[in-house]
Image (cartoon, rainbow, N blue to C red):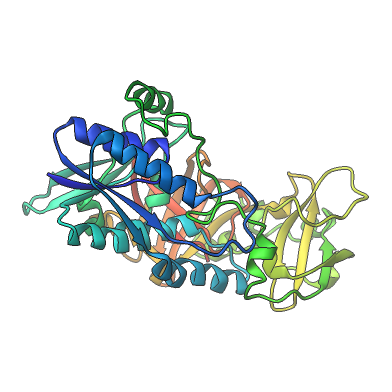
Length: 400
């Protein structure tokens, strides 16, 4: 089988190519350049020219053809513009999820097929299994990677059945130390290369500086919310305990974040734009005079206000549930579609590396409610919630 491997210059994709070559497949290496602008990127991060050099060296070592593809225009349209749009609305997007859906398994996949490849392989730590349903049609399952510290299935939570049908994850059943050992044994130049960090293809960034390319600074108030506010709001999300207290009437209550006014707390400082901050953020406020760190518990981009709370256990950081609107609900397994009135129990995560959390999903006419067994810290509009059955990722959606 002819397989295109997305060589990034890292050890994971290098070993993916190595394993496929050893298995007897016709392997071609493809390097994607998706970003040129260095505005806002921190010096030394995402050095794509160095990555390109290493990727070429890996391809030469493995004796496989190498192709360079520039997808920067597509990446800018489908990922970066989406980022700016979401931040301008006061939401926090996950560009890595979009990058996989729109670039690696869409634009890149299309170019690989044009080169004659039948499948595309990546160095993701996840697995795929397939079976035939009662009608004889193939169903593809997206499974968590064997390495619990590196499982990357969350980043693929928006893939479709068609995309999965053409995807391969050769290292999904390996642990990271095993991958590095295989790379070293094969003499691959990426064997000791550090893992990349930051935004997919952009690297680590100074977020305010990066966003200022399109979003202007605007001074506003930072307001601290104190514990007394929640004493008088006991019916709100944080006070709902367990599943038994959830009724059809209070689903929306459990999924709705607290609403704050300027009078809800005390002005303690200034910021340069509510768009530049996100729920759960600790750094960047530069406001002293507190025993414990300040955390952002809410932002209001329309009024340009930031609301904060002292301490990592501040009740404003926690929510019992969330809502995903109908047009934002995506099923990796469409045969597991929930119709209005359905109720199911799944394990859910709302960010990469978060341990899976017990939750109950309620499908209603307006969308899909996810109510957690325990209140969750830092539920953030714009991020993706993904739900699992065992180690299989069933579906995902953008948090409202």
